[in-house]
Image (cartoon, rainbow, N blue to C red; front, side, top):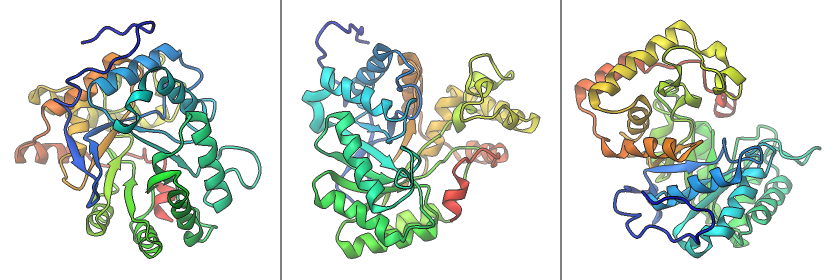
Amino acid sequence: MAVYDPVVPYLAQADRYDRMRYRRCGSSGLKLPAISLGLWQNFGGDRAYETSRAILRRAFDRGVTHIDLANNYGPPYGSAEETFGKVLRDDLRPYRDELVISTKAGYDMWPGPYGEWGSRKYLLASLDQSLSRMGLDYVDIFYSHRFDPETPLAETMGALDTAVRQGKALYVGISSYSPERTREAAAILRELGTPLLIHQPSYSLLNRWIEPELLDAVGELGMGCIGFSPLAQGMLTDKYLDGVPEGSRASRNASLSPDLLTEDTLAKINALNDVAARRGQSLAQMSLAWTLRDARMTSTLIGASSVAQLDDSLGALDTLAFDDDELAEIDRYATDAPINLWARSSAE
């Protein structure tokens, strides 16, 4: 493993594509790494820049070509894009054409009636701001981050189409849309001549809402699918096997309430950990591999607070296959816990 030195000019590892697996995004020409890096947590202005920089450099050295952001990732809002923009200037600019960079707009970003949801005004203004923060002329994928029940879907999808026609995005996607709204959005964009590339839903062993209908929809529509929060906000790691440790998300009530770590849920997690151990994997590695078992899943999004955590997650790629007995045992414990923070959006 290359030693990270912030002073030495960055030169990407020559073998960076040898171990990563890439999957075609639906019926498009675009391929994504099986594991992509999301900057929802740990890359904001409250984190040490050199730590974020080391993670991003290591990710690219391991073939992680897809970096996923949103306008309000931080904290504070916008700072994850600023951090990424600085790493791009410092290290990754020569490799821009080897990267797939995505961002989103839909949640609250600035005060007033035009600072969230799905209006044309908000989406296009937000994209301009995101490009400025990252120092980019365009992003590869621009998402509607959530369905807006009060804005006509044609307006929201029309804004995505405009972003492509302006040259500010190459592809467009949606996140946390219901199967019905996904089909409607795809039909509108097809009529406009801008295919809907990808859906980004939450998906994990403890949050399986996409399986009854959404996976069928994306498969039929020729879309890709990239799951976020595959470790259930950290629950599907060894962190909570013995309770709630100090400094964890649950202890800080940061996107994971300690109330969710019930005796029943902890029993599920420990049982799944036993299955992972028999497979020679950490619980996190098995959880990531499981989200990729369906061919309709293009990629799964991980976060990372350190290079070591990143490397552990990427170790999931070493054992992706499951036999029928393993899947049957996993199904006994992989049942929904009340952790889907995005359920309202995907139900509207």
